Every structure is written in structure tokens, then in C-alpha cells.
Length: 219
Image 1 (cartoon, rainbow, N blue to C red):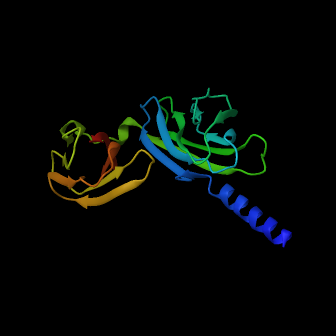
Image 2 (cartoon, one colour):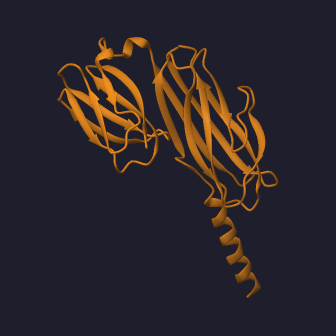
Image 3 (cartoon, rainbow, N blue to C red):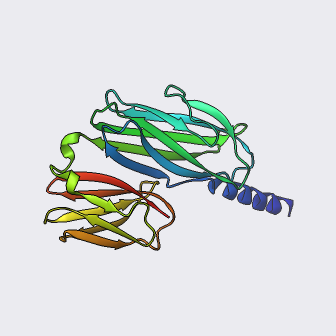
């Protein structure tokens, strides 16, 4: 009987470990290469049995001239820092992020982070962050005629194109998830955003192989 209870306890212990997660486990973001900092967010939830945690950057793959840094639950680290300790209460969540600095150069970046209790490196969870960027030539020739309004917005968002054509609109949240993707042919598209969570969103507009980015705040 003791063995049975021991096995049950071990099962629940392992199950609680498995619930420590990054959300999303693989996060992505993209912007113009002229952006100083491309930030990729992921929420980490600590369901380990310790509040004293450690991260290790187990992989960093970036294009030439790119650099990258990691922010854990407490600190934003230097670009050459590959490991660090931080504290997060059991059952609590925090926002983590990878920062990619493209130096105005087209390319991609990929970072993989492992988090585990200080005293138990064999039990861990892994999160992935990736980013890419486009050069200035990827924007519309007449992007000054494109408009996203109102900003901030509450219930509706208007996207004006300034010229007729086929457009693909993507709305991307701070976790890099595409929550809206639709094709339109109108001069002005009105989108219902009343069910969006409050926060910052990116708008990606594509047409004829060209790309335009904007941002808006949902109240």
C-alpha cells in the first residue's frame, strides 16, 4: 500500500512539473529592419515545486549583425548573458521576452530558453522565440496614403488604403499570434474589434508582394 501512495504522489509531482509552461511555447514577431528592437513575448507560468528558478539560453541563432537579449520575470539581461537566476512564486505567471536588434539588416533570429528549479536542473520547460524583418523596400510606394484609425480604438478599427486593389489584412497580438486574417478589395475596411482584449496590436497589410505595418491600441 505504501508503494501505491508513493507512486500516486510521484505522479502528481511530475504532473505539476509538466504544467510549467510558456504560452505560446513558440512565439514569433516581425517588423521593419529599421526598428531598433523587435520584441517577442511569451508568458511563463511556474508550476514547479520551487520559487527559485534559473534560465539558460540553450540556443541563439541570429543573422549577421543581429544581436539578441533575454528578459526573464525580473530582469532584462545583457546580450551576452546566457544564464541567470530569478524568483517567481509557485502558481504565478510573468511575461518573458526575447529582444532582437537587427541593426537595419534583413534577417531572422531564433532563441531557445530552458527554465528549471535551481536545485533540479533535470526538470525543465523550454520556450522558443523567433523574429524576422523586412527592409524599407518592402513597404508600399504610397504608404503615406494608408491609414489605421482611430488610435486608440474601442469597438471598430478603420483601415484606409488610398487606392483600389487586393489587400490581405492580418491583426497580430503581442504574443505574435495572428488573430485576424482576411482579404479585402475596398478603399476603406471597417473591422469589429469589440471582442479584442485590451492592449497593443500590430496591423500587417500585404498587396502585390509588398508589406505595410502599423500599430494600434485597443482600449
